[in-house]
Image (cartoon, rainbow, N blue to C red; front, side, top):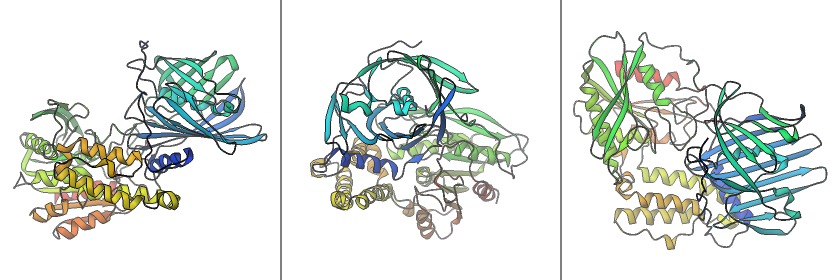
Length: 570
């Protein structure tokens, strides 16, 4: 069992509004809107609630993710006409996470109530709508858990680091009882270890609120799989277990070759890169070779991000499919991600990431089974920009594949994504946020100019929600990377290249919209443009729906894979 230690991970001001004087609900509106506009929803999980073996209700839980902000929404229906909807919002990459906001919307035959909570530096503010009741719960490590939404106990796993054994205790509040007093009940939490529940690998916890509470959550998103309160005869279970992560690929045109994976590594200035070389078996000598370059953020060789729970595996799909058609594929963890270790404390430059791709190409070219005259870069999203930069070092490169790549500078690409969010806020509440889009535009102009000129960012001039300011601060703090990242122009780069280029983009890409591909194609008329209907940013089919990138059972669309194979083999 993990050793229990005292936690201080929540002891900072998570929410510091700076857009004038706002009510608690207006502050909540900002948090909710910024999370939901472009967040990625994970598959909902239905749970059945039993007491003494008899069904007493059902609940449905859904996780949404946007950057390092995660929400858990639960809709609970209990027999007797009780309906409870709760939403938790947390911040943090990985676990433990820090609570940000909470809402309870409770309806019953006896009445209704809505409670909002926001976490501050040393207290939790709350407001009970329609009853004129506001206040603060004083203390650290406070969590609202209501008896009308028992499945919310899953969030105890979100604030717990099973490797460090923290936090030791949590103060629980029952929101529906706030009118009777601001009671805080200590809960002592322990991590018991990993456990198998009906074939599902789970993390097992136990808590004590006067009676023992046992909780099992899946290891991927930490959604509830099972919960029991033996003293009250309560048992909660998922109606269906989480689907397996590995299922049979749906592709019908796999090539004739089996393949084998081999771990590789390459030391470069400031880092030791590690990756996987996938080689076709019995495909003969002089194989064409492809280096896959991952997209933005902490993304590994398979296309999975530390910012998102679950597996995306789009780069792994590409490697396996191409290898089945006789193409050697090298993919790697970006420096500082997965097994690729940083050897320097300095923030790497954008050029350093392009140089990493070049170094992996040199490694592939030295492979005995690979024809050095048939070498290709394939970059996904931001990786497409890195491929364009790295290609300048290889005058004899056989070709480039730009997958879901931006056609404008990253500064302008990010501007468009942020503006979409704040315009949504302005539409929701024009009186309060009508000036926010123009203020964001001005703030980004000032930020970009300050970074380019190596001058301080004038934060005192901004009137923005703190989440947007925090994003700007992240750009400011990584200047060795962002100063070139913001201004690198993929359309200008592609215009200078004289080699075969495939521009491949999904028409359902809502992250880097299809007009980026058209802009790239306009800059290089000799490039081959392939637009695939119904395919999203990670190259999986979604149709008209918004489907989580990491939903199990989804794979890179075969039309994408076939286009890549044709491009390499032609």
